[in-house]
Image (tube, rainbow, N blue to C red; front, side):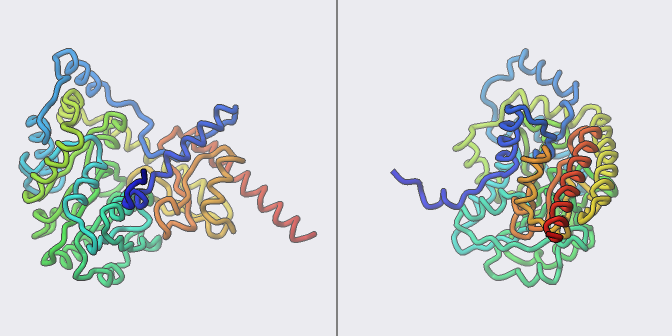
Length: 397
């Protein structure tokens, strides 16, 4: 029995592959500093955990509505309306187990062979994976370091065609930490407003910003009814293992998403939804404190990276990733990431794990303690220094 041809188009997330390799090395007694996996290293705030415990005791352990509990959808609608300066009703909100189903369901509902999808590169690898699975054509647009990892707008416009069915935006971005400016979003909206195209706006890191709040293209005139907002609780509230996210969909997509949801998952766990209500309605101090700590780590770790010969790293404006340029070290991305794991005990990701335009970069997650980040920097510096000495000796021989 053979798998379908579509299965050959599905990729994976390198972060989880590297995590497995790192755990294997740890099992052999090697010290590994984990800067590969993209999840906050903080505990889920206590009031959210307490709400989940209470929900279990109150019997929220059975099937719930496919679209999500009405109380949670109302809370999400209010939150999104306030934070994006738009009007969203609970009928447009679909609660799903994590952020990825929003990507999956949106593409399954909209894409057919021959359609084109414009997406940032480097970017979250599941975008390209699912585009290909659906039989559509991925159209990558490189992110430019010199523009804060934003698009070359002229190039972006040139990639639009009559076949463009979807545009994916991600701000704040994984892996770069870049944030798209309101000016760029306004320009892009002007090109898309009168096209038969849907925007998938991945805003999962929307609360993790170090300057102004991240803008949403949904707030641009004429864009709300053609934008899918992807958000959730994993990053903001350190709830990655809870598997709860949501999409805000244009009205014409809601029924389709609900059908895909009922055919795949039936519903999202009810007790986690009760906890999500507490997350949105409760004390936001833990979120602010987490973001403040991420900023402290970002500043220290990026400064360390920029002090290393052959390495430069732009200061990320959001998320919790440092995307370091390593071109001047003489290494390519994948071999250096492998060497740092196996020889220096630092787990990070090759920029190519996020697309071909990630060559020349490494992604480091600074969702780890400041002590560990500084130790990782010492290990990286020592490794690069030793390799440079070996190269000098070889040249002299």
